[in-house]
Length: 109
Image 1 (cartoon, rainbow, N blue to C red):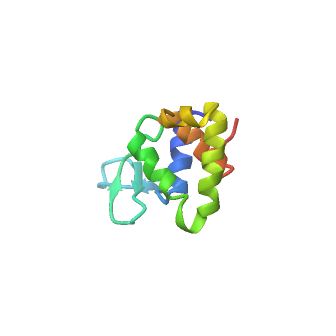
Image 2 (cartoon, rainbow, N blue to C red; image 1 turned 90 degrees about the horizontal axis):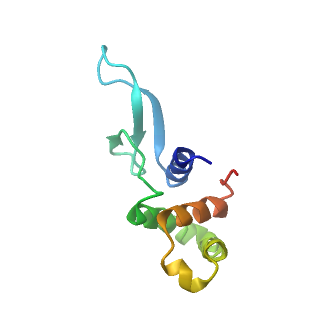
Image 3 (spheres, one colour; image 1 turned 135 degrees about the vertical axis):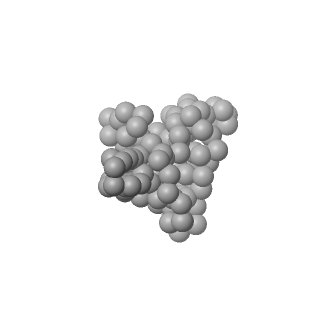
């Protein structure tokens, strides 16, 4: 998956929504616009999950609660990716993103 495909897949799994034809005015073309998971904010980008540990932490937190078993699957997959539990502590945002997508069966080689 390309980095952009990964960002979009993670964002949509977290509740972000893409609006393909949002106009600011009649003379402006549509732009890339998204709605945040709370449905209250429009912005022109998804979070940078592959480079931002804080954004990735928020994504991983969506695996808790109603999807509790997925939280444990994420930890297991991340440990396999990192090679050991100790290496998981220093896992990059990109490594966490890949494990997140694999947990939800959204990873495409």
